[in-house]
Length: 318
Length: 239
Picture 1: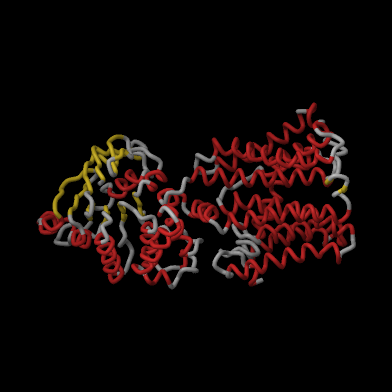
Picture 2: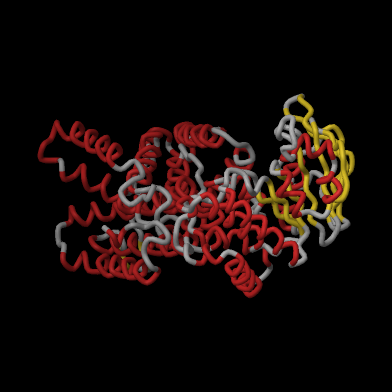
C-alpha cells in the first residue's frame, strides 16, 4: 500500500517509476498465465474503464471540475467509431483505425463546445452544463435515426483488425486495450507530474491565487476538459469495436456516475486512484456473483463503508 | 513604476473606493495603512486584476493595465501576495514555488530564483517535499512571499503579511521585506500593523472609508499626532 500512495511527495520518483514498470510487466504476463476467456474479458473491460476513469480524473481530480456528463463523450467516440467502421469505410481494416483520429477530434471539439461557455463562470454551471451535454448526446443518439438507428443501436461493428490480423480475438484485444491504456497512462503521468499538472492542481486549490500567479485559469480548465474528453472518446471507440453492438442505453447518466465513482473511490487527483477504483468497481461485482440476489445489497454496503472509512479514496491523501 | 489615478471600485452597488490616486516609484517601499474596511485590500485586488475597477486608470511600467485579466497582469511582472497566505495546501512546498517559477522566464532563471528564495527562507528548503497545508502559519506566509519572488517580480503587492503571526515572526517577515526591498524590488505594502509598516516604508498613504486622507514620507507620518492617535496605539481606537 505504501508504494501505491500516489500523492506527490509521498513516494520518490524512482519508486513511482518502479511501481509503474512492475504494473506494465504484470500486464504483459497476464494472458500467458490466465487462460480463462471470461477473466480476459473482464480485464478488457477493466482496461477500457481505466482509460475512462483516468481521463475523467484529469477534469475532476486535477482541475477540480465536477463533470457529470462523461458518458456523453464516451458515447460520441463509440458512435463515431461505429459509424466510420460500418458506413464510411466498411469492409476494410482501415475503418477501425480511421475512427481513432476522428474520435479524438470529435471528443476535443465537443469538450471545447461545452467548456467555452461554462468554464468562464465559477460555481456549479460546469456541472450543470456537462449533465445537460450527456443528455443531449443521448437524445441525439435516439433521434438521429438515419445515422444512429435510434434505439436499435448500431449492430455488426467489425472487430478491430490490423491488415489481416484480427485483433478482436482472445488475448489480442487484451493487448490492444493494454497498449492504449498504457499510452494514456504514460501521457497522464507526464501531464500530472509536469507543469500542466501543477497548474491544474493550483487552479483546483485556489483559483484566485492561481490567477495572480500568472496561470490562465480558463485555458488550464479548457485543456483539462479537452484532454479528458478525447480520452473518453478513445475509450468509446475501443468499446464499440470490442462489443460489436452499441445502443444509447450504454451511455446514460448511470455510466457517467459509475466512472465518477471509480475516480472518487480510488482517490481523486492521484495517479493510482482511478486505476484502483476501476479495478474495484469492475471486479468486485463479479466476485459477488455467487450470492446472486444479495449482490447489489452487499455491493452498495461496501461502497458506503469504503466512503465512510476513507472519504479521500483508497489512495487519496486528504 | 506604478501609477494609480482616480481608482473607483464597488461591490454590488456599495462603493469601496471613491477615486484614489497614488504611485510607487522604482526602488520604493510604499505602504497603505488604515483601519479594517478602509479599502486597502480592494485597492490591491484592483491593481492585480482580481477586482475590476469601475473607473480610473492603473499604469504599470508605462503600460495601461486597467481591466486586464489577472494572469496577464502577473505576466507583466506585478505579483500579488494575497491576504491570509493562501498557499496551495495540497501541493508540496517545491510545487508551490514552481507555480511561481514558470513566470521567471526560463529554467535557469527559475533555478537561480529558487536558490535565492531558499537562502532568504532557509526553513522552506527543509520542507520542500512537505504539503503546503502542513506548514505553520509563519512558514506559510514565507512560502507565499517566496512563491511570488520565484516569478522575478518587477513589483510586489503584499497584503497583510503580518496578519495572525506571533510577534517574533512579524519581526522576521518585516526583516525579509527589508531584504527584498534592498534587492531593488519595489513593494506596495498593505498593513494594519501601521507601526511596523511605517518603519519599513519610504512613503505611506493613509486610507479611510475608501479615500486617501493623508500621505507623506513614512517617518513624518509616524511622527504625526493624528496618526499616532488613530493607528499607533497612542490613544483612541486602534486600527
